[in-house]
Image 1 (cartoon, rainbow, N blue to C red):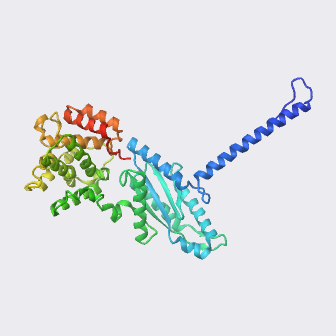
Image 2: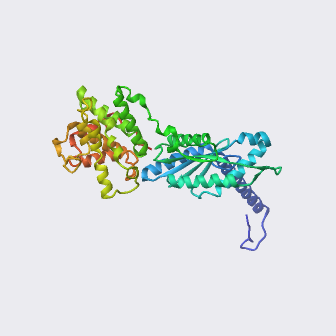
Length: 418
């Protein structure tokens, strides 16, 4: 507090001094309290040893980044970093030396990432980095830069003993490897496990791990997969989803909603089974589409669109001649027809389109709208319902649209992929 001379030139009285001292004390207390709150908040959000974000804050930032990326159709990547054989360092040099190593390691990593990137201590000797708007290839470059820098940096203990550090890094990208926070963490953790199992001091994509190719939630399909042919088709469908991760679990979600729609439409047993089979295998023809087209981020060229439009014919080859799939084949073959006749592969119009194909088209369109796709931001449920109604009579059968809308409003729907 700075006090100038009185305007009248007279000296300060004892009362003036008492008032000034009282104001100073109150100001000092307020400043101390503010500093204390800032310090408490800092300790609540950062790791006490390294100064990085702590585990709890990391989860919050991941949630925010997933929501932002899903909403605006962006990519981002997540790294899990583990110090190789760190227990040996603690055993050989003591835990205080290990703490120094971790703090120095953080300094190395901080020097290699952007200000917008977020470094956190996940726990123990594990660290995580959130890389906003960074695709898989960009994340691999960052990870490899970190791995190489750590491997080549001269670390020393407080006593001056040289110590060699190396790290293994798992890489997962949104939405290629997962569409949720927990899924992304699990994918990066699986990639880290593979990197460590492969000899350590290396970086690994989630897509390079064995677990990434294992079909998920097979128990849901148990009632349908009763013979080797069905099992082979399911494996093929899972392989397609592995090539095209924007559609991860998509066929199973179509199956779930298709089963509910079959009940709402009061379909017979054979139609229900046909719709279920078609739901599982409606995109099986995508096996004929190059992976570069499946995962392209942006508008397709005319040639690329033609490659996509040709995919139903592979399903025709796979299903033709099978008595079991005879009723499901028209559903799979024609679910990309449009109600106004502008669809493919035959340009059928209105009632010419098989009824179950029109049902599948409405279901598939809705789930595409509420999922992450490379060509559009994800819609909310309300936005997707509005879009369905705008497409009624042109792309979609209006009556089936209203049945689905009623089902969604009455009993909810699968949560949008976030």
